[in-house]
Length: 351
Ligand code: SF4
Image (cartoon, rainbow, N blue to C red; front, side, top):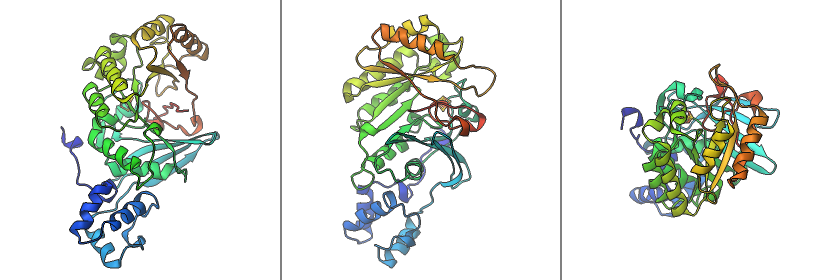
């Protein structure tokens, strides 16, 4: 573990309900105070202890001294003509992350970042060019949901923003527990998707956490040579290792895994690539999301719509369910997904 990945001290927004109970017991307070605190922070959105007027004043002063309540703040906000809202959030140390609110009918999806920057350096991704700045805390992750859910009591949450979620494992799992806590938003695990470039050990560990969240694995190629050229992490964890871990996730959790595949013209979008992809995947337990790509630089071009349709047809002929994602928020560069880095122009889409 590098210094960049080292865990930080827990702040108020990081604490789970049971940890608040313990904290309240140590302060000589009854257990119901823990529920009041958690509800105030995670449902009512209190971001200053003095605002939590359900608590006695002396307790608020004590909590302020022990549990800092620093949270990301909205630095900028851009609204797309399609209703997508992209937030640039400023972290307490001045770094910036992106969060996207994506409305779709009566459904809302919030796309969150798990790291500032990313170490994995995928060739098509603007975030990868930033390198890893630091891991986010659990509180910094859940705050993105609270900011971007726009009062929706049960948004879908996708970990597809900046960073590799499973490289920030402890904070991401803590964030999942915070979002699913009955005392808080109480989100169903079916509403939460963790997207990974494919870290097999962490996928297996996540399968055993008992959380039951959905898993999306970014493949982006159907052979190791192409995948390594696009995603250097493939040199360490090749396709076979990633797919075995994903199959284990599906088996242990009972959740169908989805596979993300960004369509890059002339790189990974030929019919034979689709056929090879289909042969790699388990028919019943897989779903492929084909992602139209908008260039972040001159190196890659997105596949034309007819090429994407032809690719989808081949998958369908092989019995692999797939869908083509709609691009959302193009006009506000609403990056989301494993192509984050919107300020430099990348746009992926979640629909
Ligand atoms: S695509 Fe995802 S894993 Fe790859 S560099 Fe970008 S943020 Fe990191």
